[in-house]
Length: 246
Image 1 (cartoon, rainbow, N blue to C red):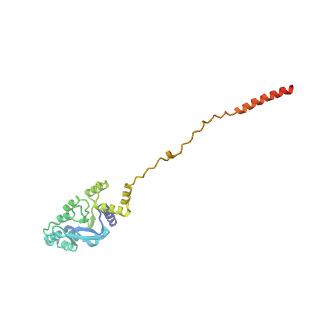
Image 2: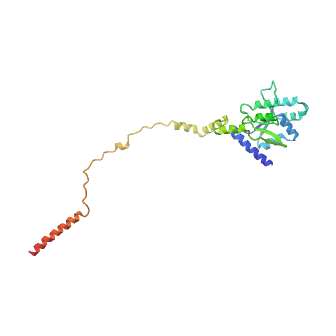
Image 3: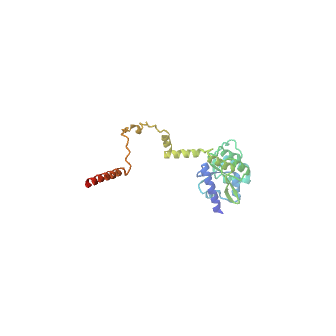
């Protein structure tokens, strides 16, 4: 079962790497509900997440998530202790904190430029995340961490890219870099600026004109000379025969 989960995760990570430019270390934003579920199911997040994603992982949260856990009191004290171990990323609500779900939504706006994964058990937050392209969603099911399959919004975005309707910035930059490295752009410019060569005179017009000779005579048909010779021979023999009799 573990091998099947890792194959599933590897396939999805390849999808997000190729289509949305995700790279290691993977940045996972966790909220209080995910930390609480991990505590309840005895899941060691720092150990299991890198194994599941098969790469380097940066676990992080926000000031708003910590403030929310602190405000909820003793019931989520353990979840707050877990969240405090992670990196705290700056958000735009430092002076006026908002709910954890609203904060994570704002941090993944504008096509998720920092390539965050969202780890949450909040169904309302998960529904809103699925309406955005390029934001992987993680949750806990039956004591295991699961990377959710791409949402219909993600798949539609990828189909649009493949039909050349859209192209992400990172793909444009990588294509441009490849062209510069291989010198493709310079070659295309030289090809587009071909010089027109001067055309010389037609070589056929430079040839000397042939002199016209007498028209060819018709050769005698075959056997005509032989017939004349035979007739002459016949006359000579007749004369010789008269002289010999006289």
